[in-house]
Figure 1 (cartoon, one colour):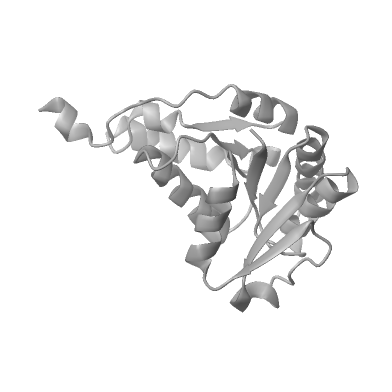
Figure 2 (cartoon, rainbow, N blue to C red; figure 1 turned 90 degrees about the vertical axis):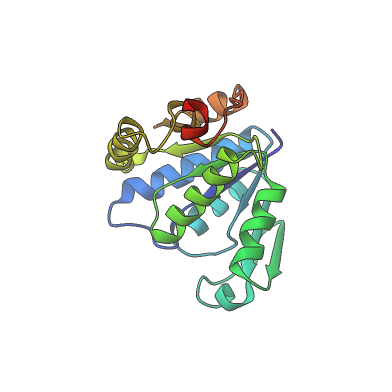
Length: 193
């Protein structure tokens, strides 16, 4: 892995633990000589993770749509800030630039990015690792829901296992580095026929 994409909130959250998690994640990415790829904003956890990587001497590549450049306050201190036309182009470009993906705490934009990149992996569009940095148990309720989705037959166990979860940036990146994608057919009913 040479680059890691981080999906996270444009808000900092209500607890300082989220900012601490973002600082730790950005610093660990830089410490390993990886490039941080993210949404290009200077606010919320987005700005915190970018600043932490920059402060640790890392390279940071932001990708932001024109329409959000003012709202998310496009970060002007990055190694590179790429301004694109649409959200779709932003996500595709971030995926293209990245060798793995981490979702940190965030809102519906973060969830949308997480689920889209997971879907692309499930469909075989990419074979890159995907992980959740589970700061302060933020993703615990989602894990329960995903386990239920698997139990009810809407998600294959192999596809559920595609999303690694950890509370520590270093351990999470180690697990991502060792990731081996499972080659599994997506459509459950075809295998049962």
